[in-house]
Length: 437
Ligand code: PLP
Image: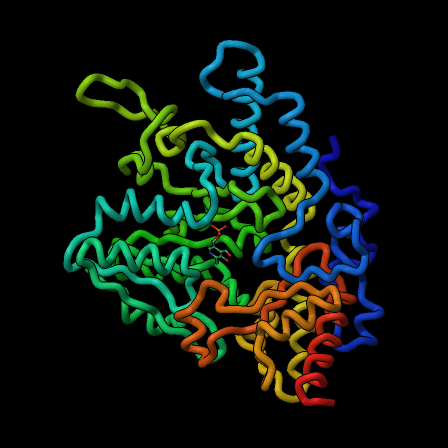
């Protein structure tokens, strides 16, 4: 079973070597941070330009091998069996938790809960902690850049509990307006939720600064949507917790792991005090006719047969990214996003949304005058370039940008300057088509 990318697949140049925008520079720049050969789907079609990694990442061979290997050699229902195969499955699941915890910088692995993804994690925190602690007259704060997974979940909790739902606005260049946040957060605030990185703009938010700001003004819980953080930045949850973060959520499929698995990390004291969110097998301690007591962490929040294979696959993805080094991943993406932004912004009629490249991860959202994002995505698709078009599950943000949709290209470890070339060429082709030229 292969586990890690072999070092000779990595480019010779350091990922943070300076690069400039433009095709000439792109030709000189190093290629992918991890060779496309390591990703079977990309290897199968060298002409494919996959620029939708913010939606889901392509899967490294190591992850596919880990999944197949688990099912071929260790598959059994864990926790319940006295036979060796079930013990092996139980151990594989526990080891996967420890590996994902190490990747996220979590010292106490039992405070990492496996969930289906960030969406489920948000619903868990709102459904358990939120229902127990948010009431009439309280305030729940999110930001205008939150993904619907967080925005709608907290909005609906506020409505259900009679709380006030407040939205922190953004600066003109697409960052969380910290002055506005400081004005919003006060003694009645029970929850402050925000994304580590905006999926629509790529903005990297100053998590520890925001947590400190909330702590100074309230006893609110700080909930970070890390769906777009974990694939690109070292999370170091224990350090975030020391600064005041209470919960951090992420999705496995965006870090190269399988779909249907993710992680929610929380402070032990909060998790222990929270009521269960779902009921069923594994999460109980003692079931009497008229009452039930709960299992310890993490099992209290993992009702039913766990998703062992995908946890093992996620652990393989985390091992790979951890070995690669998140600082290199971010530097690589920023170099590509910087090239893409500069070249797109230089085109007549193209508006790039969001902050400068050094304040974002590998996402560039843009609008092309006279070309609807969906048409642009279709034209690019004909050229083998996959981008996303739409509201990116961020309708409140789109309204603030004054658009109904944007085009979004997003880069990851397998992206290279040829992807930028293909994107820019495709945008120009679309402009010619719509100009009738
Ligand atoms: N939050 C952000 C910032 C996202 O980008 C996404 C997915 O795109 C989600 C939450 C939801 O993640 P999932 O669909 O994996 O639950």
